[in-house]
Length: 619
Image (tube, rainbow, N blue to C red; front, side):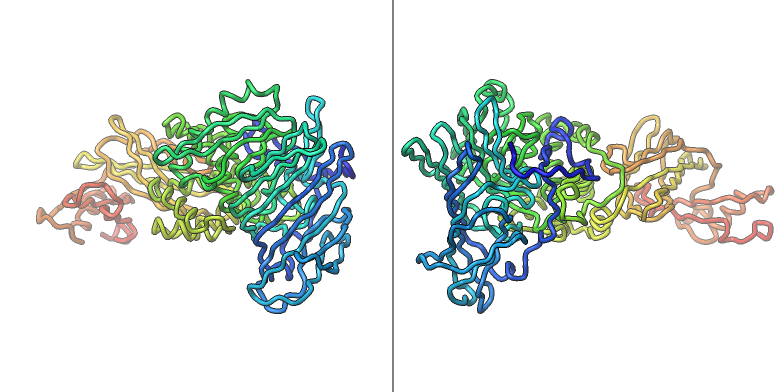
């Protein structure tokens, strides 16, 4: 059924998973894992900015071919721009290249998958080039399919999935997420029993001689890999999202007829999801157009702008792909090294949907436990030449979601969600890298996050903590608890705050401390005997941890020995001598300032190690 299919076994298989395992962009099908050597923009492509694409294509399901034209409107960013280079997978037939006035333009199209077009005259900064490429052929099927001719229930099912580099397989374009076209027109002509679903709003439908043309208009900025087609004899139905004083946005659903009843329950959750995410992320970004789903024959889903392609209908799949409309579509990773900005965000949004649906933070934590990954590798994708590396479910999706989870706890909910909205406002309809997000979160929270992002995004593995608590009883009835926290991993240290939970007979208290050393001690004053100590009790950190029960060490003397309401060195010496007594034993002595604020903060403790006074035999 598919043309020119080459089977390639990839060593990295963890990115191929079913929607039941992650319920997100599962990227299940893989036709030809093409290793792209030219995934970055060329030098020439950095010299022009695409403003508009105009796709006008005829699609023939019987011959599995396409034909038509693509118009490209581009603005020069340099002086003397004399040609443009467009990505276009080699194998199609170029029928002609011209400017908007019909003048033929010289071009070359070779097996380097690049279409080079000479302009009729050089352009200076701000000048526009309007190029029209006419072509036909059978699209290559690379990556996750790019352009698929398929069948469902005996009927043709034509679909696209162009992420990461598949748009070039079926239309000539500047195929990089760094350059969003301001808008796209999509006119698709098919047999009259088929329906074409696509981005934006449906402007016109016309039928002539047994063939129907669907004209869609996307008027928000869009990257090439999000331009999509889903074509089938669909059952179409609509819903509505209501926002801000009763204003409404259409919800459009294109489903396989035999699934119409099956999808109703979870599709009905879509308006609530849009509202919930709008509260946390800012208003749905394509509010003047639509949101919807179009079924296709593929495991999982793909977040095509304003119309997600769906291979299932679980609420968690819906939540994941909907969240992408903010994180992936409105703001897009500038290159696939930083794809976690798309997929980690959307995966964490699934967990947040549980939280918002159930009004329960525990639901969030429960879902995050299903996303734990404790292996090696970096979230930052070092190899962007294969889909296996880019869409690694453990690193990019799961561990990327944990970065969001940990960051939320570090800065706190108010700053976290304010930061997300500020990030959305600042980079609205643009493309970003990790540092852009980090800088916004630092500005909003006032917390320096370099160490956190450096270790978690660009580093391997995770912390392995061990807590060793010891306590002292005192003459005033208090207990002095010393907790040694060790990082036992062989990989470099993690520098970040951790929660320490201390439980006594009558209360449970959580303290947050900064931790950055292989072994670090923390001290607390308790009114009762400590019963247990737990690191990160609520599971905000991706980690392993070993906890020991508190062990008794001995007694200490506290208070002002001179009864002058002030601690001084004489009190320290007297305290040491009194505790040492005639046995001359080696002890650690704590003097607690009873005139402090009583919080038990470590700063309220004067910690005296016996080495300060030298050999006890000489005192």
